[in-house]
Image (cartoon, rainbow, N blue to C red; front, side):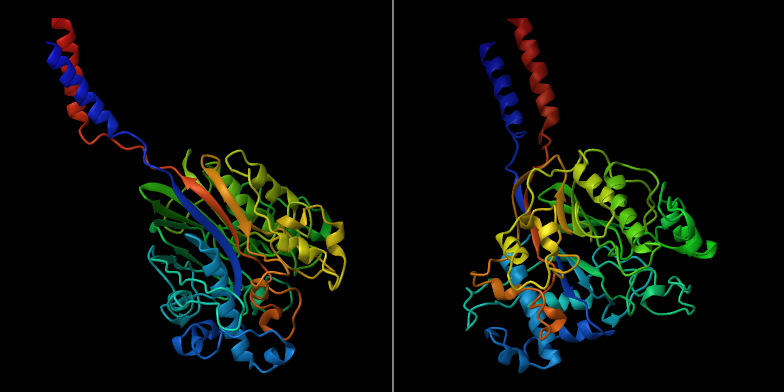
Amino acid sequence: MKNTRLQALALIMSASAGMAHAADTTVRFATFNASLNRNALGDLLFDMSSAQAASVDFSRAYASAADIAGLSTQQKELLQAHNVAEIIQRVDADVLLVNEFDFDSNGVAGTSSTPSAVDYSSTAAQRFQDNYLFVAHGGGTTGRQVANPITYAYRHTPSTNTGLASGFDLDNSGAVGGGNDAFGFGNFAGQFGFTIYSKFEIKGVRSFQNFLWKDMPGNLLTNDPTLGANNLANFYSADEMAVLRLSSKNHVDITLDVNGTEVHFLTAHPTPPVFDGAEDRNGKRNADEIRFWSDYVNGASYMYDDQGGTGGLASGSIFVIAGDYNADPNDGDAFQDPIEALLQNPLINVSVTPASQGGVDAATDPNNNGNANAGHLTPAQFDTADFSDAAPGNLRVDYVLPSANVDILGAGIFWPTEASPDRPLVGEFNQPALFAGLPSSDHKAVFVDVAIPAPVPVPPALPLLAVAVAGFGLARRRV
């Protein structure tokens, strides 16, 4: 009977070996408000075309005012797009959210309330991949090392509320129309949208573009604690409050397959808490847009998505929250409570905060146009946006926040120091001769490296294991 027992043990050990954990997968998640929005309907589509992409020499260093002055307005737009592409190549994220990327529907500029399909990539997003990201940048006279082309096999471009006409006079100007009367601010339909690039397969999408603000429990629209005329119930009509959407762009849960493990990439871009009046309608909306993800990861039941589903994220899910949230936990005009609540949520891993020395340099640059940074509570190394130094100063507003059930291996902000050869890609506030006043964007790319655990494998021959165990028991009884 000794041989039978040994054979049974061998079977058990062999089956158990199939249950050994595979190695974790290191995944770099990033967010970048790249300011790839344009000033007119269809401009981004035009800028992303192959002919336009090739019409500016991005390998040349535009180091002087004379260099820049020699560029046309169109060339400045194209150079900005190339600088954005080079930053993305240098960050080399596996999963990337690009905020402020104008939406188009299969090459037709504009947006709608219809949710995008799981595998939908806008034409502009495809062209940016083909004509910018897939072309090596740097080198030439730039003084920078050549950055490798980057390819994302999967993309998703969600529809957006920005510039989508509401039919109401939402800003109480006395006339209906324009960006302030859209469901989300935009001078044309689709402006300021966003798109997602991924090296991992996108398996599912939940979007919340049409979720109504009034349907969030405790919302600041119908439960505004402000007294008097500045209460939102006195600013908006009942009909307006009935149709206002929570998301100024969209809230989108992208389900990724990371080598067999399901990961939720939670993407959004809440409205800036400014550009309003004493009623602070944008500040209140920003607060609730941020709170939505806190409720979602906590498994709240009230939300409904554009695909017909309800409820928040399942308990134990792996997720990464990303985006430009337009809120600093200590400084600026936003309500601090919602972003603080997000950062203090026990389901979120905040053990490592992305930082840069470039942010420190920018905060104390002697050429700054003001001293707002000197009074800030958030350390400058954590700043992610280069705003006017008079007001509000540089702020931490862009976030990549993994769930607490994964480990953070590293993090950073692409904000090179003044001495770095990469510094010209980000510049400093404000260079009026450049498109949008900066070489790329007033926001910096933020990234976090996360260890995504491999799925717990199921033994390939579980019935065989059961037989082996039974046989082992019989063998023991017969000895």
